[in-house]
Image (spheres, rainbow, N blue to C red):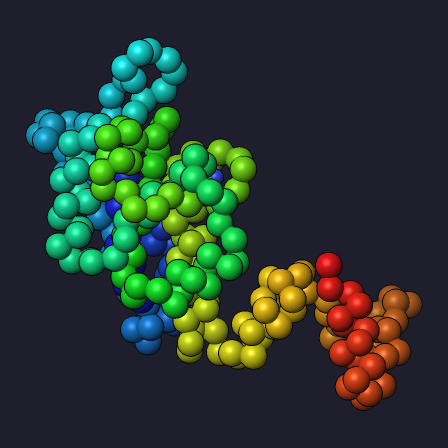
Length: 216
Ligand code: ADE
């Protein structure tokens, strides 16, 4: 899976991808992630300005259409996937959508917003899909883009070592779309707190029943 991320803050993203499971996935070429600095596409040669005040007045700044147009058009030459704009104005991401995205086109372009958002004409012409990661507002789309990359990537075969554990995730089909049951590990007793007897019984049918009853 190839991700191309258009952002004003590529450095914010690179740290998260430089360690752990996603780093291994990149090293193994299961995923690739390219960053594009939106300022590089600004026609403002002096200050590389990308934002301006909103028509009609009001607080905050809006990202100008020109750098967005140039950036998205250039990135599209390298990535044929849909352009996804991360914005609190979009529908909220679910595990079901993450599964669909992980099995759909093998290329995605992610656009991170900042400030009050982007010029509406770009939303109407170059954006294929909008995604919010929740009903709250962040300072920009970089964390949401990382969250989207993370949740899609771990569904790609080989990225998480244990395929079985992904199949049994919260919200998976196997767990009837519900949240997972409680987990315990050794020791069987910790600070006077015991692991439920059924989990030590070795009776797989009973364990399954106990777990199913605890899905929420
Ligand atoms: N940018 C700012 N807040 C956001 C959110 N909740 N989801 C996606 N992008 C955002």
